Amino acid sequence: MQNLAPIELLVYNRPQHTERTVKFLKQNEFAAESRLFIFSDGAKTSADEEKVNEVREFIQTIEGFKSVEIIASKTNLGLANSVIAGVNKLTKDYGQVIVFEDDLISSPYTLTYFNEALNRYRDEPKVMHIGAYMYVLGNKNLPESFFYRAATSWGWATWERAWQNFEPNIDVLIEQFDHKKKHEFAIEGTMNFWKQMQDFKRGKNNSWAIRWYASIFLKGGLTLNPSQSLVNNIGHDGTGVHSGMNDIYNVIINPKPITNFPTVVAENTAAYTAIKTFLSNRKGNLISRVKRFVKEKLNLYFSK
Image 1 (spheres, rainbow, N blue to C red):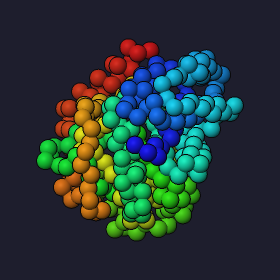
Image 2 (cartoon, rainbow, N blue to C red; image 1 turned 60 degrees about the vertical axis):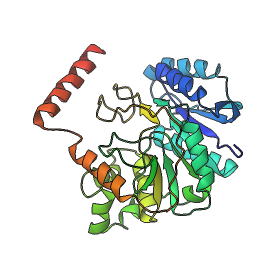
Image 3 (spheres, one colour; image 1 turned 180 degrees about the vertical axis):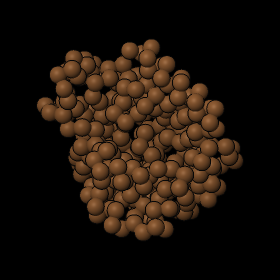
């Protein structure tokens, strides 16, 4: 395949997660032909320095890609600033980018999917984002891939022409939403996307992802997604910046390549309904919520 996208890998202070992420990434079909750019953030506190240095020692040993370039920050930029800086640089230099964080296990065909989609929809302005993660959906009759409004952040790709629409200013984004848009943005109230916007405004989170989704949504853009996930997040063990200990979003990775892509650029209504149903029911009844809460607390206690 020609014109393979560069890979942006964000790492910080989780050596074991990083090693697993790289191990699976190297097993991808196009890994040996892909350029890997590793953005290593600086330690936020002195307590993080040992693990940051451990990660940096490991990434110096990485092979199996067309090239490996390490961009090590002397200061702590934070995840959001690191993601944005990396996407800015690589989309400017290469016109496209594939983004991985340090806690993602991938299918051997994840890079294949990304590059196929990047080439297929390169000149389709309505398509702005390609996601590799998907919830476990109840509808088993969905196509292999489909268009949807929201952007997932666990393994994704985009083009320079789409990223130019990214609006980092939360006030500029918020003022464009009326009641109807808020409702649609939040998948008819089944997901707390609007609350994430408000929390960012209040300084309670520093999410690049919610601003990217809002930027896409306000432009009337769409995201491409697999019906069975091509990645799984292994960061729900309390070690991540924004990830708690939660198995709701654990998935079985699709072991097969995706060969069918939508030809009509429009949101898939069946997929939207399946996602809305998952989001409505994801936390279960009161008993299952209590069991999950107790399990998470016990896991956290025994991991200390």
